[in-house]
Image (cartoon, rainbow, N blue to C red; front, top):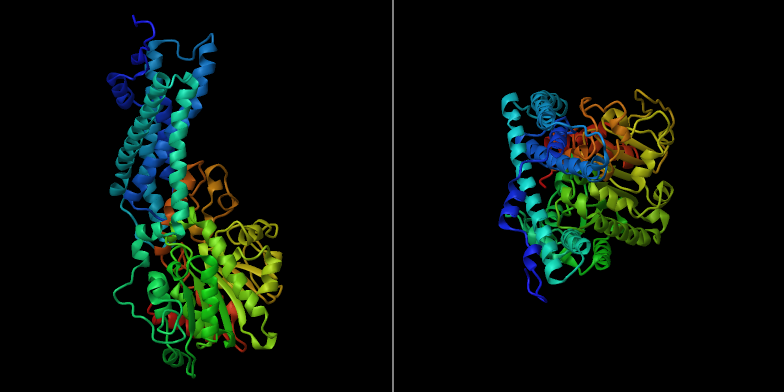
Length: 579
């Protein structure tokens, strides 16, 4: 018996045996059943083919998610409903042991059968997008890897739960907190730590911390040479210092074709293209970087060119060399292209955590250039066109409140593989009745159009659901989107709701076997992001085969012909730009 005035803190401690039992106890039957179902779901086809290693990791995480969902659903039933039942569903010990085994065995059999079928699904999907096909037996190994990942996650989760319970008991003994408060404080603190860490990652996308973590993005490649042309940022006369551009900016300003090379392709004298860029280290903040870009446009006399392209960069600050080279070939170098870095994170990671930085940078850059451009006499200013790919499309769209303002403000827009909460989403959600989300028609294609192939760019546009003979009036706005591009279709709403594009007939390169499953489909599409840009042309997030034709549709010079488009398309394919 404890002496008066002395607190027996031992009753607030978790013994070593209790901790061991909590860590190594067998899995909960209901949780395991849900885990196996989620694991089976994760083996179903997604947008792009996956190797067995990637699939195993995804399946393990999906199983862990299902386990948590099962526990969450079972808890209130076990806590408040079952104890009040006069009749128990499992009234005998034998039934209590046999029925769970039957449930788990059935779910496990479903996983094995699905794993075998998954190899066939992956082969069919690989054929659709022109990628290598997996063999059946190696692919079935994904279930073993998934089980290992699931066990690891379960062990770590139990460790955190044991820590939380131990912390709650410690607070009860040391701080004399009520049990409900003590056991709520520790999980809350752990949650705040996670939120703080995620917030740090989010804010570090445009900070020095991210440049240290993703240092390769801001280094200098061994074969990249500082440009000598005065028309390029980073040159000896440029205020945008070479060492401040980061690797993506250095690749942009040092790459592409010279005037002599353009003249060879086009058979006519060419001008040196202007490429203006500001990196994260080029100025202290976004406003200062915009001013630097404007100074560079003034220095290079960019306002006297035929076309000025304001380009939104991808997450790490990259620009697609095919897109840049195509417009410079089309105008034979009488061009100026301005861009600005807003993050050091890779594109797929920027899409997840750095979208606010993209919006702020894109809106500031477009507004700054547009304000200066609008002050010039209409007959003495360049054609102003905006361009963005992936997160770069969202970055540029952030400068406009709607399609009307976009068309009033610029002379054309090309958005490639978009994903945004602004124009693109509002336009596709207001598509013409009877047209699909994967390839919508908006207002009979009068001003805004969507394309996945060259045939979609032909006027009049025809597809299986809708035909229009309406003209495409300038200024034209064009969205390129593949049905297999996870950058386009990634959306947190996939966690809980089925999107239209998974309810309607599939696009040309999406597997008809793909289905929506809560939580799991979101994880599948998220995993697809990492491989989106390595897909063959015409699939995933690779639009290389369509870019020259898209530029011709949106911003072709006067007198431009289909033969001219074919000529520059052959040039960028047969002899691609060096960067």
